[in-house]
Image (tube, rainbow, N blue to C red; front, top):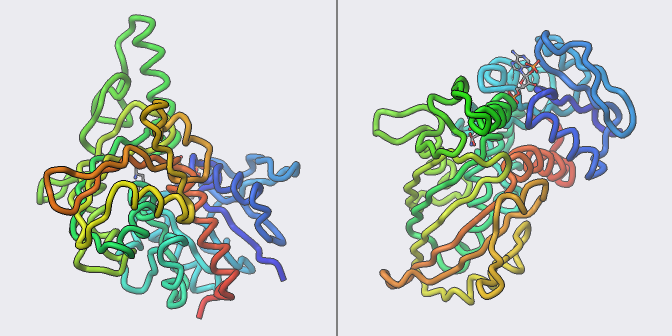
Length: 339
Ligand code: A2P
Ligand code: 11C
């Protein structure tokens, strides 16, 4: 029997994309149920030419539902994911609340699909900036053992959600019309600016987004020896996160080795032709499934080091697509049930 699938947060930036990805990949289902807050109940959404009606997400919503894809904010996931799992519905959650829980696998299907084998009902989808970095780093780690990663991110406003997309658009319009800007979602103007501040500040001076990259990398790679240090920056881009990544490896690995290894690795497109001015850019990656890697160079200041530039659509591979790929992998491995 094909699963009954709930999309929780179906009216949001990621939820809308989840519906699109389910449609495009011909995901097997017997019914798709879009869920959101009471504000959206009754709203109509189009799916494969049919009209679906949004229902309010409540404690009773999961009876008879086999799979729930959550992207409705942390507090909603925290409350409803255990309720769903308890009623026999497998949850793939896009928020940050379950990621570091020892009972919840944190999965990028190209990297650690085997971790799905021990799920107990709730599976966590990693942070968008972590996912694209993992897709690119895992093949290198397998060949040359990564010891340390220094990453700086250039993250799109869609990572914050629909309201932030509208805020950037409104600010650009107002500034071009010579009007003062209104900052509501972000603490400062985001149009024509960069904010070195994503998610909340922690006691150690890093932001929570930066610490997610540190801790999630270790859990996904299953290797406590990988050291990561991150600086996360919000930039006035609508879709697509970019990352400047410096890695230090145990084994010697040339830039050419990295290029040929990544070119044959799953989920990656190497775009590295400086002579043609061809390198990954968010405007090209937006709407696409691949993680793009370019500007691959040897770090000339250390023995075994590589610099590269990684770009991917944060809403697709960074969120909706990875979530659906986790669900597909659960089905392939015959794991779509709460043990
Ligand atoms: P709604 O549109 O009804 O507010 P985004 O990240 O783009 O802001 O989207 C957030 C998503 O999470 C929306 O679909 C939103 O629904 C949903 N959501 C937010 N709060 C709740 C809640 N308490 N219960 C169910 N869905 C929620
Ligand atoms: C951003 N990475 O770009 C964030 C969005 O932990 O799931 C996702 C936050 C998270 O703002």
